[in-house]
Image (cartoon, rainbow, N blue to C red; front, top):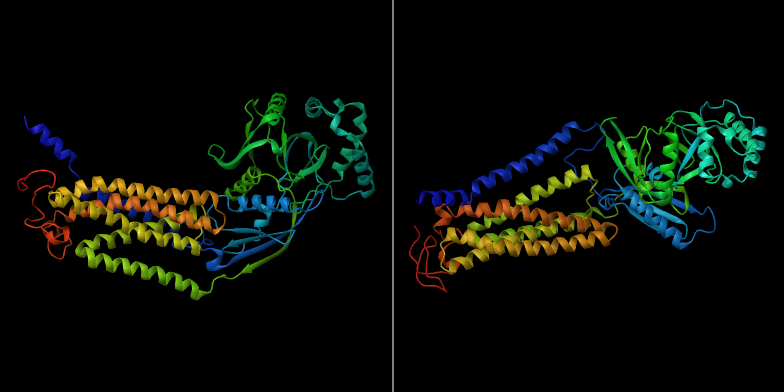
Length: 549
């Protein structure tokens, strides 16, 4: 009759040894992943064992953009809006630690840590005006010579016509039924567009096209060299609801998934219904260049589609960010690109690191003096937490571009106090349980039941503070908040899966479990007298209990 309860009790008994083995295996796997990343990295990449450092620690690239307004003046509001959009594009992950500031009345300064990144201008300085147009004529070749007089005359004819009178249905009919379906007053303009297309020279770099939304457009796809005549805009880029990078496993290529909203979704519905019958193309134009001309293969009613092309992981991410964070209210020209050295002197950095080491030394010495042998648990917890933190900094640097700055280092140093405090809370709860009359081994489990609620509450408050700071702060302050939140989560992981199981194991040894004077678990240190720590004593609220079996 007693076998079943005893078996159930055995199954529910804590297994600290198994927990420690699983924990250490997870840490080893973490470093195994780093080793794999280091072995598979490209020759030009930095070592996986080297953290990404911020501009204040290693220097980087400083880019100065000068603003100009397409209409009106460069105002403070427009410049601030452009700064915010550029900041979002550069720091899309929130942890890259790039600084974006304004200077004077018409300049935006971008400071990016690491190797020279002058090409970042292509990602953040573009106006990102995306438009969707019908392909009135496509697959045309690039001209070798240009008849400037004919181009000038044809351009004037196109500019003099009011193309905005054409309805969406007429724009669609221009592709599905041919340009002869357009009203008679536009036929002279059609001929002029054909002249412009015959004299259009497509170049891979530096293609300059005057992209007017309400007028037809003669342009090309620089990657293929094909020239096309496109209709006035059917859907504006402002009608894009969301844009996200994705990897199409079936086609084995990177794409940008987009979703339309409002009138854009309705127009997309109508366009794809008409084009999908004969699987005709629909041009996606970015800043006057044809980005892609995907064939409409299905009638799309929910406004969701994707842009495909010769994308890499970086270019698809850049385009998604440009579309996601909107068009710049100003146009920018590069006023200077320079490589900057660290803004903090080496002595200042060393002083900060020395301060952190001194703080760590003081915590270790105090723990060993006050908790004696049990202080080794604090030292072990700090070492393990440091190892995990280092690995996470490296992995996050490779994965999401987390960059370590001096404020970020300060956030990591705070972890010393968080980890030590969690142990102190546990030990003091353990001491209370022993004073209540429990034996040491029972007190470890009972004390943990009470201590973990306090530890979780304290870490939750710390993590919430870090989260709020990360959401509402800007610049390097977000790096401090991110580091603080990361170390708080690591503390929970360490105290649950390393500190507590280790104390449980030590309580089963002779040196600690029987309360050796140097263990830190002796009767005097725990505040009891008249019994051994391995025995059950008189409880304060209850009567006398017998010794432990």
